[in-house]
Image 1: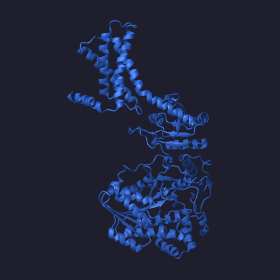
Image 2: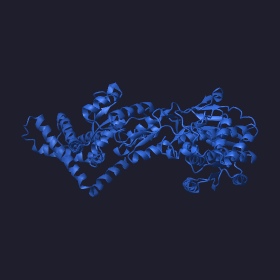
Image 3: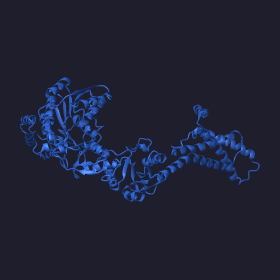
Length: 636
């Protein structure tokens, strides 16, 4: 109780330093209470106040003092005219009741004339109406003026998708801010019970599927998505509809309602390609496999790349004892090392510049560091480039894999994880065929080594270096055109976090020889391009053209995840397919030696022939490798 009185006393003493606005509110509250009491007496006694002058003067002084004390106690004089809301209104009402209680207490203890009960009630209501009006009117007037000004200045007519808490908070921020160009005409929501509701002065005009009618009626140009956890399939349907209507789209990045944060217009962002996955992202964060890596010695090849770098980052989070980063790209390796050093918390981090095709260098690294676990992510992965240089593809993807895998086997590593691709299944490209042969190398060693050899197959990794997403972003940024190989080409997609999560589960979990993420349905690249154009606030085929260039050498319309033999043994485990790989071809080592000799001699025709013999399902689409350089454009 003493602490409460001291706190109130401190607030009163602090008034000497309060801004003029706070003092004006206190004076206004006191004057409002006095006038409200006088009006209440007039109403109660029908305007006849003769002989009550002295009584009324005492009561007006007491009620004014009580209201000022209550305002100070509830801090209602420290009012934010711009950000006030429901909680502030509730505080004002509580302060009103407290003021009335103080007023009655002063009347009792000072033995002042006692006012009629009806006068007390009327004074309370009148005071609250005026005090609330003074506090909320500026915000309402400012919002009304801003809305009027936007209408006069031809701002973007905008609809908010989502008439829930997130949508209401977003509208409130838009109404009080002049730092945007959105003139909100209403809401759309798929909940039929909300139709016709008025939220912040704006009506729920209908469902999302009624956007075509609403766009035509209200001349809408922008859609702001404020729906927490919107299903990917529904999002893609909305974007397709917006593409047809020429609507630009922005969204809230997360549900700030669930983390009790204030939503503002500045949080609106262009949608990310990850939002377009036709499924919910697979979360590997709580699977527990990474705990096995704690304190271990680990070597990662291709550590300067998108996938290899993320593998290194996740391994550091798992607190490995020693992490050796290996890559031939010394500049990117140095930058990756600098980034990872910033998050190093115990353990040892080493960067080694090395070419995986240099057997002596690789063996020296394995002898020096004696890694217990090896993650082999280094590879040549660009399909058209490898079509033009099949011998280089073999030297790196086959010869390099063979060198690293043998070093792991001969130095007694416990685990070896090989990163492959879905293009290795019934390949039509040199890159896919060489990655398939790399899988054979790993499988052959697994049959005779104490080292546990496994492989993972990736789909297209969203946002990785050289992938379709950054290419499309660059093309959109420079105004197009966006180039797509074929309107019907489809690909599996996964995020970088999913790819690395799959690698760690395969490496440290109970998977079989081969692990593949269940990536759901394949995405049409043409659809992805159109949606990315919409996400950038442009209209496909109007603002940004889409050009079809035809399939490049080695490409096919769609990918597959498992071969027929693997499908017979595959099992599904928490969104991951695991399978037993078929035995490697007869006399594999001798045939690999011949393949590598042909690659060293730059005999491209012989390399293609030997790849076909090793991978019977490999069907080259183009043998004129020397003629395709002019087609190496940034297309998909």
